[in-house]
Image 1: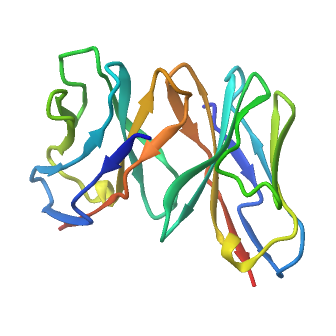
Image 2: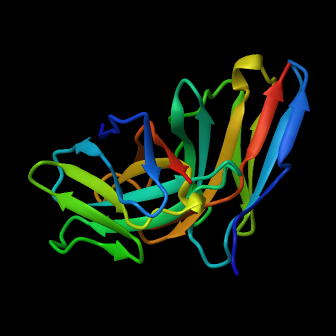
Length: 111
Length: 115
């Protein structure tokens, strides 16, 4: 049963600290997405990759967020420095063709 | 940019009954995909059903079916024989075929199933 995995599932950190979230897409999927979910904004796209190349990161605050795919089995989303307004659930999703399958999310709390 | 509207923040249904969740969207494109995702308290986003815009036939997956009205840009989800496990947030989503693979989500409808 292929699934997208994300680590950590929960992260509590202090303002100013660096946060790295990791995602392992489903083997064979060629697109990877990062979404953020908050009560106020709902689900919003941060970045996505196709064949490991970044195609769109217009939803990301560039000064503090960065997304990479060092290889086909790992995608990372990094926040440096973190701020309280970054508190949210961050989802990774992978896909092939038109469907996307989501990971369980990382709940980030920045105090 | 495409917008997806779910006008019902909350809905409730009696167990074993049928409920319909509404979704409308705005687009100038003729080819696209539409999806319904379910998010239970575990937060996992689960794909429930998809519809290709070029298909006139409404998609069906077991107790879940859609009413796709392309001209009206409407895409409602019908859940038949509701079960307690259907209680969740339901998100309608749009995916363009022209401008990237990302999904545009509605704000969600929280469904409560009453025993």
